[in-house]
Length: 204
Image (cartoon, rainbow, N blue to C red; front, side, top):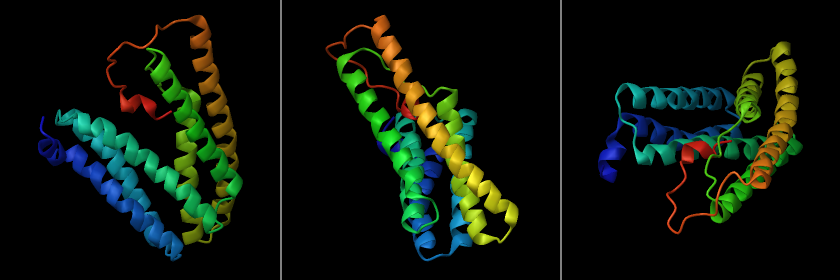
């Protein structure tokens, strides 16, 4: 399918919308318009849920979408954590742990891709729980900055600690799983012309 035709697919249009929304979320956070930032973040989340649903219902799964969707998802989280830390809404410790984990997993995945035939970088339950915790934490932080409710402050603290713990646990479990497979010799050296890995499986 031609690139232009793939761009016209409804799921990819929603993914592009999510990419366009990201800088506006950042602008509103920096300008302390947290109500707008919250609304745009929720809109980005809705578009994330809808693009996968539409891809299945309309049978519009494309190669472009397989790359764009995880990029948009990771870019949203990877930019908002540093911005929220820079504006003193989330401790820098949280952001450093989140970014360090992502960089470490990227390096491990790159090494395995270059040196072995292993391509199954699927997130385990800890990775999925960590992603949920990160999204929930950003959501609660924006809600707490928008509305003055005590229970939001409690949820904010829970979200921050949950994100830190799950970031460490998921990162360690991912590396241990890959190391076990490496020692078990369950895959062979890479082929001369290996097929590209499925980017959907890289969002651990």
